[in-house]
Length: 172
Image (cartoon, one colour):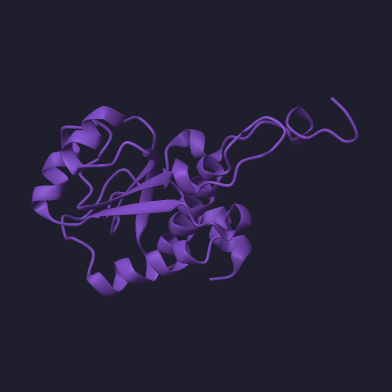
């Protein structure tokens, strides 16, 4: 799909068909994640693929925002492998994980898979449910699957603040 069309038509899907994504579809989405840029190419992202009934049932105990998706990917970052800014110690890994998530979200839409980026989840519950190591921080949850026939964007999807309220040139 042409990029401008892709970014214009993609929306957060909140209604899915019940079928899990086939492995080859998951692998295409993960291939896009693997191409995402990261600070100093450290690749601190860790992606947990949840694509079984049992895994999705565990997920439902960690968030109410699963929207009945049959598949999900929890994108985390390993703080031990993050590039660290020398001036203030800020880590690039949360940003890296967000870039990875964006790549996955756009790649999914490009091949007909809907997704919704969810941050409303309990990180401790995720750690406990999926045995996530202490140094690995859950950042974003992509619930995904094939959109249901009635899937459509929320009305607010089409609203945007004027550019002059969010873009500044030379100074604030």
